[in-house]
Picture (tube, rainbow, N blue to C red):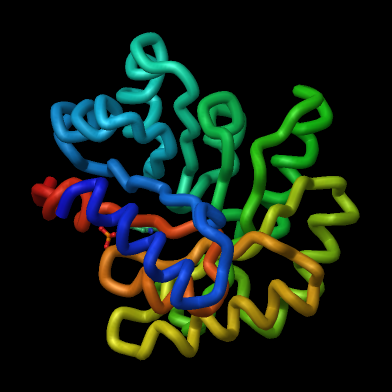
Length: 217
Ligand SMILES: *Cc1c(COP(=O)(O)O)cnc(C)c1O
């Protein structure tokens, strides 16, 4: 599917949900995609991208940034504390804040730098043992803890379990955000972004629908 088609579908989903046009941010997830495909999306004028591994992002985006202005890079995958500094240098937003140790490290570095990317707290809405994210029952306390550290918490993020109805998870994330006064909702991928927008997504993370299937690596 082309970038234009995705933008058209996002706009239609905004209208259908009674939301203002242009309120949903499209993060084009470029992980594992060949550079020519990424370049083609850049050439069409898109500037907001997502990567899930910091090493891969570091190998690809500094060079693109020398060639294209205004690139907005979002880290959407797990972050180890020993890569936090690099992530803060490279990324405009981090969607995977999921534990106190990482919050403390980010807070310390933010103080040192006088600057911090926008942060989303990842919630493991399906309570899956293998998946990152704070458990829903711990989310309220963790959000408050992060705010006490003066971290710029923009919103919440989730990745629903593959075999469950995603809208239940989107609704839960929206409820957790609303009761904590958070505006940002990073939810919705290639197969379910329209239902995420219906439930209030502010950031959709779309990879394969824009770039084509990822080549196994
Ligand atoms: C890969 C990835 C996406 C994009 O998935 P698609 O199904 O290709 O749209 C979104 N979010 C996260 C966290 C991802 O790792």
